[in-house]
Length: 307
Ligand code: SF4
Ligand code: SF4
Image (cartoon, rainbow, N blue to C red):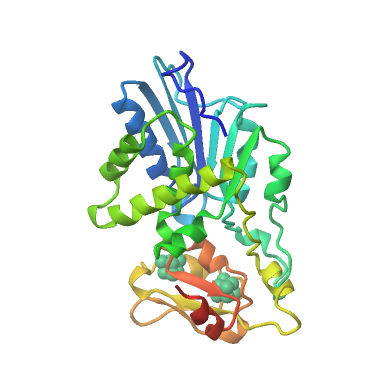
């Protein structure tokens, strides 16, 4: 992967488009980049749309910087870099990428909207983007599919997946690591700075391995794939709920296709009817506070795999 021509090397404006869904931290990535460019003395224009963010809706942000920038929005086919925190959102915005030289960096994280789960049988296919990272790479000048969510989970905080992506993005732009880290420290709470810096470093390392051709294809973690690889015995899904993170917003309760979730007396989500749960993972994907994880393997296997 080459470095995108930033205005330091070229008078042109650099266009970075960041997309995802509500709760993933699109705006943080955008703010860090805009601040960083401003600190370097560039003129910066930033615009964002996050009207449905609290309901798992699409969120996107345009960041444009250079010696002089007139418009805050990137037109179709003009993005130098497209950073996607959610896989299908990334595919939806691909036409915005510069043809023949744009860079696409996407988390393989999938957040499936409720209407994509009309077939409720356990393991049923969802109506969701089916393109694999390898197929997408054939249509872009440079494409990187990173399992940023898994990297963040391994760090013990799924919320820093956006900063893993930021680390990956950093390799493509002409700013120093110190500049990135200083900008990051300006926006994240002091108590999470350490884990955010680790996430940033892992994102950088990951993409540098990709450049050396040492990357590995992210695993397919869809329910169907999990079941397909699990042999004949289909495990019962189970939920890992972090009560302290549940803000009682009710989204998962309302959108669970099987209506098997409730808010208990303490206004914390609870799986009231486990036998009805199909493991579709909608509650996990839609929770803006990462309070639910759906496990499709036995509790014993999960415990054995825990770091
Ligand atoms: S688990 Fe998440 S989506 Fe469900 S009520 Fe709590 S905060 Fe809202
Ligand atoms: S509890 Fe979660 S995983 Fe189970 S059916 Fe409802 S939304 Fe799907």
